[in-house]
Image 1 (cartoon, rainbow, N blue to C red):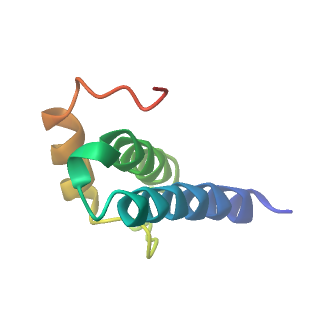
Image 2: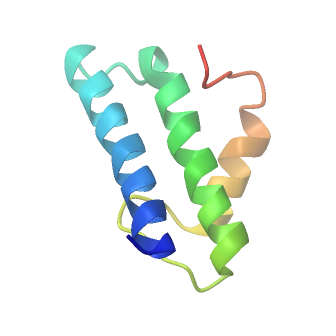
Length: 79
């Protein structure tokens, strides 16, 4: 499995975990903050590693990811 595929499956896993949380919690984003942060951290890592032209259907634009992470420093995705 190549490195790009490994990263893509990490993003897919994070996106699926978020979707599952939203479905279970009747689309209450506040109950799924740790999953949103995990996805955005994954996206941020992809942008850091692959550069400004990196894309993924699971990730918002780089500027959106960076802004969200700056505003949500209190959320611990490990909990």
